[in-house]
Length: 397
Ligand SMILES: Cc1ncc(COP(=O)(O)O)c(C=O)c1O
Image (cartoon, rainbow, N blue to C red; front, side):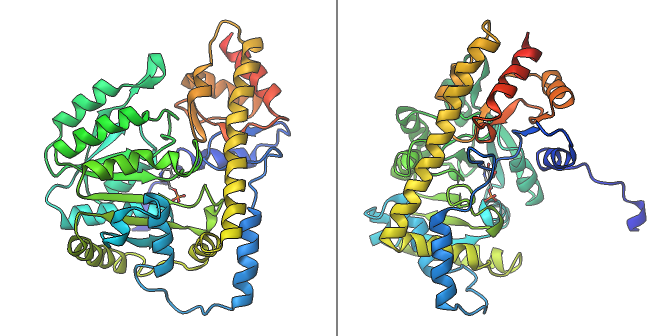
């Protein structure tokens, strides 16, 4: 039976990295996959992470199973980061978390929970959205639809289209929102737009699922949570899929969380029991190491300060590369205006490059970009920016 299978197509984004790794051009540049790179083009292990691992080694933790919902103190750290430690949802115990293998794991558990436990199994996603969202929710069997998000010609959010789209949704439907650093566009709502979105979602009685994979990568840990916190002001029941792959640089450790915030502890307790049942028949219980790192850092004021400094360095480097790229493109393609890239946030930007231009960059310059023209700004370094801008200028002119 297996011999009848045709090979599955490679993953659109990770497949490009496989091709990149095989490319022998010494000047190759990978701007496809969403991984942070430092100015030397390396994905660093944070010093705060190393220090936490050192402490953990000395503590000699057992390797027994974790509870289905993961490390309890990790869950508390997650809720603190999401909501702010003085949020009344914490005192009222109306927020709870299951630790998941990465943000992807959190989204899949959310998908299973929605499909099997909730009245509506329809999920609305922004157009465009992260390429893996439709795969995850298809695998969970959800009905999918999209709402307008991007005003592409003007490189801004199509807020009226989005609000009209929300009016088309039925009470109980799920709306997927990107907490910050919208992937792939890099374009986020302003706090005022978040207020409008939160009100509309509340009035329409939708269930928001906030995908929060980049907290701290846009403007800071607190600032980046503005959208989520406004949603929680206007909506009684909220799901949050958060990831610590990017902001702690813990990609391979698979650290994420699915949190539920509701208006009463009893509602949260019941929802948590169902989330645990979804986890049990999936991966049973989560891996410990990465969550223990996050919990160790967040529980130690000195390590936490160090981590916040390192997170700021990553954020500042990305925003610095945005400015450098835009400045250099003024020389290489004076007829094109890339100023919008300065305003976008997080690792990604829509460059406006067409599929053909993206293909030429790969063929002629070994520059790897996904077909939509989305670039990972964190892949730009002071060493490769000149080659990159000259090649982009070349295909544009
Ligand atoms: C929007 C978005 N959500 C979720 C994830 C999942 O992250 P993780 O690697 O923690 O599974 C990513 C990763 O690229 C992402 O971009």
